[in-house]
Image 1 (cartoon, rainbow, N blue to C red):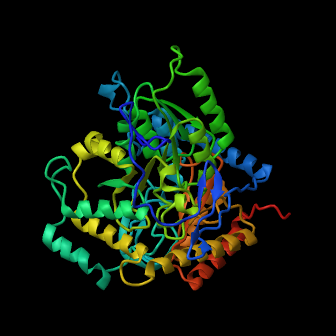
Image 2 (tube, rainbow, N blue to C red):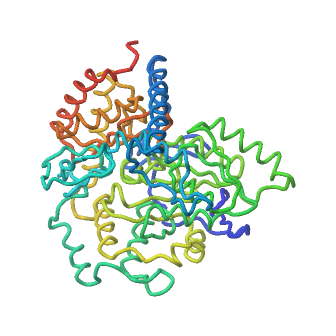
Image 3 (spheres, one colour):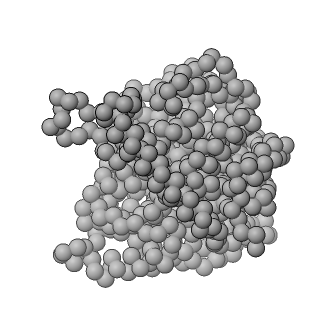
Length: 535
């Protein structure tokens, strides 16, 4: 791993390396948490603003009613379980077979209870089948249920032109075929659809090397490696970087892929409060003073795991303060930019560019191509020593198939658009339009009286609904208005913080956003979910 002093740590050994020579772009950047201004074309490249927000809390009666709703639902759940046990009500849930009653149970009792008695009531709010591209409008396959959401059947009818407010298509690059996609079809004809081999065997193509070089150039780092699956980029590479004798400090709201990778690593894991740098510093100081449990030996490595934009909160990591802390305490920083790459920064280079930081301030860059790039897969980027180490030790490189060649070409196309190498200014226009749409949509929701989470620049805008009944009603009513939105509840969020999550895209026009805002405004009054304090 790249260390704060500029070297790289591989298997606990420090290897020196020279400063990258091609990082010649003049930028504003933050060193040790202090902004340093540089000039580009005679003007500062970035106007630094710390991302610090405080959120309104729901009135106490709302939280009380939310918990009471869960309590009543739980009581009725136990009553229905009693009726199912005695055959009064038919049980549609999976159950253990009688002949296996002495086996270790396959199903966790409480998880099953929640699924069959609470989640099943509002299951129709999720997993809607889509049958079109994820543009500003999409088409849905209509489905109905005859047994209270246990099963669904399709009617054969397609719901046309539903406004898409739930897709991660932030830059609007996920569209139907057009002439700019001609290189993708040419790669499909030449290479086929898939690569039935791993990167370590016969699965490394020239397109993969081209994409890795282009990605490193786009991120302004020394090297990058791509993977066929975004989730596996975290879950299979974190164990390659840390192991026994190492300490992981993980944000409490990190994605499941990060949590899985941390658990598989065998390292000690200590979560810190979401984006709370004071809590993180306290854990860092304690780790350095006390060392490992029982032995008191110094930790081999301390790795901080964070996301650029948190998908459920819409918040942006406090990267300048985080960089200052990791340098102060000689820790390493691993940043997942699944949602921030392409959507943040003047050139779409993510959180690091958004805050004007130097590329060397982050040790491990991770991101996915499934959002802004309208493709699939992920990448690890940073120092050349780091990436070379990952190439050898990553489980994905050894055991999983390589990225599909047409997908790689689609990512190359997207990056070139962002870098302006497609011969026009389309990338810069998309980034600018996305920023304008985010600002407009967020401000209107606040003016209406909704409690929303997230940073001002985040394309993910959560609207707090709290009660599970209102979460499902919000989704159902908007779908009747031909507006598709993602709603989220427990266990993806805290129990009492159910929400709707709007995802804004550069492809949304003002007319589309106004249509959504008008419907949401009326629905907010109908459901009484405008909880923002009048003051």
